[in-house]
Image 1 (cartoon, rainbow, N blue to C red):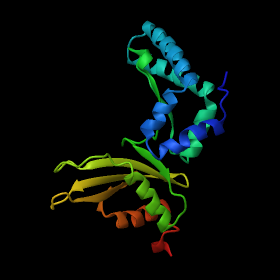
Image 2 (image 1 turned 180 degrees about the vertical axis):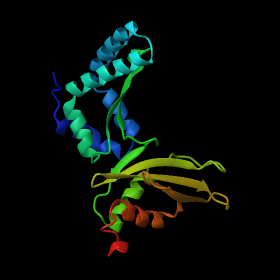
Image 3 (image 1 turned 90 degrees about the horizontal axis):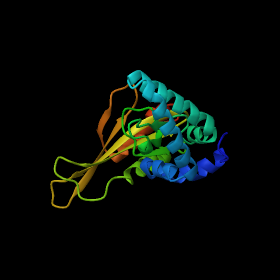
Image 4 (image 1 turned 45 degrees about the horizontal axis):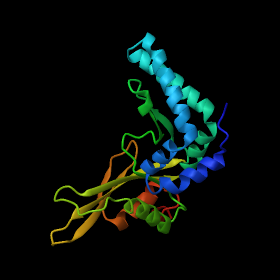
Length: 218
């Protein structure tokens, strides 16, 4: 039986969290009693079924069955995440068949990079690009960076069905107590665009995500 929560319910739950911390969004999902109870039972049953074939094929089959059961149980959650992320994200299961009670439900972005925050480009404008970049910057870890070990955060910015990885690093400056930031843009199937200033990064972000609307396209 599908979840009684609507797409709007899940949207209201996740929307304020994704732009602050994807990890916080994941934790909130796991605090939801409906998900926690379903996952505990379904994950254990899948692990018990795997005992007949305790190998990689059995694990893959068990995961496939668990994922199909989740999609049948929580279609409104999947729809909410797809809409919130413009198709860039979905829900995945971190299934641990050897310890099924430790299995987790997570927002997944189909990227090799670990995404700390997700935000949207509100409009194809320089101001919106700067605001999206600022959202990623806001998630930088607290504390003073170490020499050659900058504080780092990786975000994903979505617009019109496309997503762009954005990595911000805060470095320790040469003068005592000083810091500076650099930005790397991480487009899929293209080379990284590295060592940008915040101003340069906002302009390039707009060019990559909304090329028809960026100033250079006019």
